Image (cartoon, rainbow, N blue to C red; front, side, top):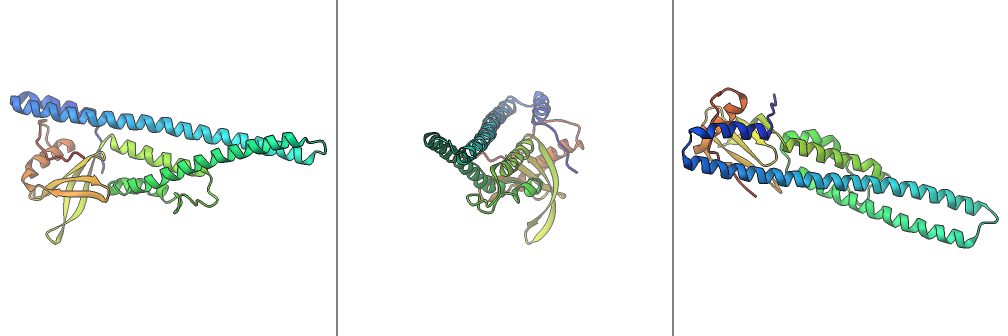
Length: 254
């Protein structure tokens, strides 16, 4: 079962536990919170830029499609009329060629986005990969040769994947996962902090560490000496530990 808690609530809960800490702990907490705030600002900026770009692509595609259809109708009328002027036909033909070139440019941008999306999906946690898999499978195998798929059919896939990833990246998720350790498979509790980092610990609190995303997937770093702190973090998230406090856990910042 997946339970969510917004990063803002986590920050408040952690902040409430700083009162009982030393001046050094408070300073460490302030630095960690500042890094978290900066990360959220970057995510917010990238999300806003994508929304603007998405709206621009959709608007451009619709406008070009409408103009292209109108020009095709005008050309058909000119070609079928005995009194059609050669100069008018040539002008419309040139305009159609310009619009076709612009449409090709939009197709190129969509293909570039599809290629990037395929690479980014490789870094997603398995649970998120499962969510976006139906949309990923709709992306052409070769985005630069999409066959009969139109831009209008391909854009919703890109938008859906990005929206799902943004939503995942704004929350915390808890899972039970099976991992391989010392030649055997064991169960671990794992807490994903969006797409930034994940903390795991086994049921015996003897094997623990963290995972962070790379271009080849999530890299695992064992830090079993932090098992107690990570278990405390997991228990607070699940509500098993009602004593909210600051926990020192390892981190990786790319």
